[in-house]
Amino acid sequence: MTCVADILREHFSDFLTIYNIPYSHYKVVNALLNCRTSALGAHVESCDSCGHETIAYNSCRNRHCPKCQQSNTTKWLLNQHQSLLDVQYFHVVFTLPDVLNEFIFLNQSFAYNLLFKAASETLLNLAASKQFLNAKIGVTSVLHTWGQNLSYHPHLHCIVTGGGLDKAHSNFVTSNSKYLMPVEVLSRVFRGKFKFYLKKAIKNPLINFTLPLSTSSEDAYFYNLIKSFYRHDWVVYAKPSFDNPQAVLKYLSNYTHRIAISNYRIISLEDGMVTFCYKDYKDDSKKKIITLTAVEFIRRFLMHILPHGFVKIRHYGLLCNRYRKEHLKLCRKLIGVSTFLYKLLIS
Image (cartoon, rainbow, N blue to C red; front, side, top):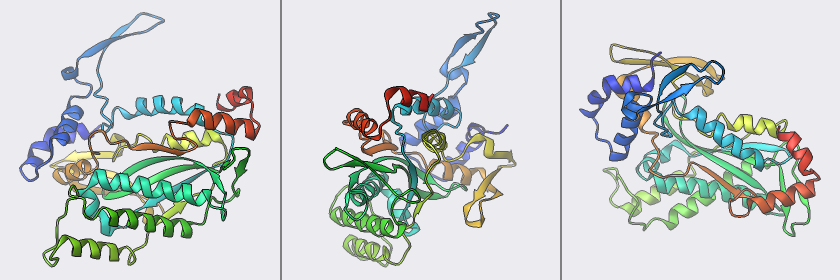
């Protein structure tokens, strides 16, 4: 079966004749090429029953490697069991307009952090308002930067508790069973917050610009960028609530450690052309096939390498790391789920 490492092994040198990449991308490519090969060493695996031994090559454990994500997902999910509450959960997706893609790609750390900040504040502030829950909710957010065909498509998947603690921390307030908050309101507030923080950063010397020839200054470019906010849709998508807490973890497993493309989606590598399958969500999620040159495939794949050290999974509100144990303990007490029943729930 053809994998991403095979494509890199055969055509990465061709890619480098056309494109320059940062050192961090070289490190990722090197990790993927060496994953589960003798270059990273090996260890002995033995059967507990018959004692048969085999030599297994070590994994690179890079978060962009298609071969290493299953074990990472399993470990992460085991740790998340303790954060489950016996309440409804909602899935909310925040998407940025395509017109911002160039700016975001040139300023990835800044823009991705801004996306997390705007989306989390939108959810937490609206939930805390008297118009809605008037409570502190819990949010787990996961960043994705790709579409199914490897296009650049930054968006945030948020799993949100269907309720939260009131301001006095004396009651657990439950949300509407059918929806969390109106998506129109979420969209407007999200757009406003993103615009607000972007305007505050206009004088940040670390922000990178590629100015169009018709634009005379960075201020003019920023002004036009802000104006474009109102000419394009800001999509916030909210799915119905999950059936039960176990379904939340099962669903999260599809998102937390996913990378731009899995090896099983790659159909072939022939004559410098890569063919892979994808779902076209704009066409009723139909399964389709696309063929790209190997160089273009590598270019698209490398677009989704995250900045070094960037945290792509974050928790907010009830689930923020500092007070998570205290919040969850109080929530379970108020919800009425004993420790014994909770253990049964997640077993």
